[in-house]
Image (cartoon, rainbow, N blue to C red; front, side, top):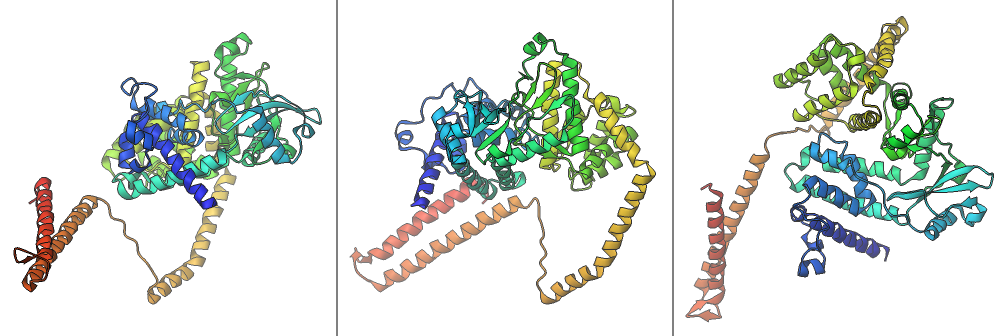
Length: 560
């Protein structure tokens, strides 16, 4: 019974998705993905429901944004993640998807109360001293209520929207089936790796709908900024946290995008932008763990000028190797060394072919020439990363998801900062961190540590080499070794071979029908028409129809 319920939920959701996509002018995608059977009976008879706005009024990117917003939390988050993928999505779509709004009408207090009482196994009055029925913020995954604990602490309680987990899992199953279809049947699908992208997205959104995971992130940020005079992370109350309810210290403040209110409060706008920038530099260069969703609703500034970060469902990691590589990029620019730049990009996983293309090297030389002889103070890392990624995308470079997330986070932060203070200079703030790391590299302790690590790695290689060679020879002897060869540029040849083999198969079937029908006619079997066996005549007729179809197909292809 449960299996039937799931299948019904999938079909129902498929129909909703198809209906929304058709109404927003994406019927051609419905056709391409073979989703026509999921169109509702009403739509098949009367056509799609009227569009909210005529297709001609809005661009395709705008219509896509509206469609994703209408489809709910999974697709909103999907669009937000897509907006970080400059390697996959055109710039016009990037700009529009970045505007996706995750604000919806709140659900009722009775539903929120049921969730809380189910999670804690007791009445809401036994959990909270007071609980405001009106939410202070609402999104597609959950909403936030102001409350007071029995101990007297004022808190913000995030309650997950009922049914959102089941909806997300249904949507992820549908996305995965569409990704597999695209990878198998759409020519460009293999290059974009849709299955891998959906798998990565599934991991991200499952973390978003797990408030325990968000609480762990929040506590890590809380510990990292303990004692900070400029940044505040709300305290987490573990006693009042489950997968569907998150309780944290209540924080009051001004939305970072409310510039008029910031000015009215007498806050120094330049200091606000500097404090946010320094917070991110600390996260990236010192902690290796950064807030990856810095849209205006997730950053507040108090009346005292303290920066408050909220919503820790999405976080990024910068390991020591990546930090080293980022510094290598700056060094390569300052030295005007394209070879060193390519080496750094290879270590970061941004290029996989060693940058052997002359056109690619010329583009990199043009890029670093723009910054050559500049001090770190004038090398804007946000602009440089954006220009570098543009070059890599046009050269079909490989862009790892962690680099794209870091780049997008820095771009959003930079956009917010420049709206508050148009003269904001992020590069000037980065300079001390880069200088410190470059200085550390020339210290005797660093050189000794790197030398020791290289010797240790070499010793491990020498020690394991005989065993690895022996394993390879043993597998080769047993015939269990498998070699995989990757071919590129043969897609057209494979398609031609498919068409040719289909035509040969078709011709064999027609020949078999003709031969079989001829034999039947010679037997004189009944029933007969004008003395000729009907079955034989029918076989000739079918062979004639198939033969004409094959001839028409060959003539239309122009290859005969």
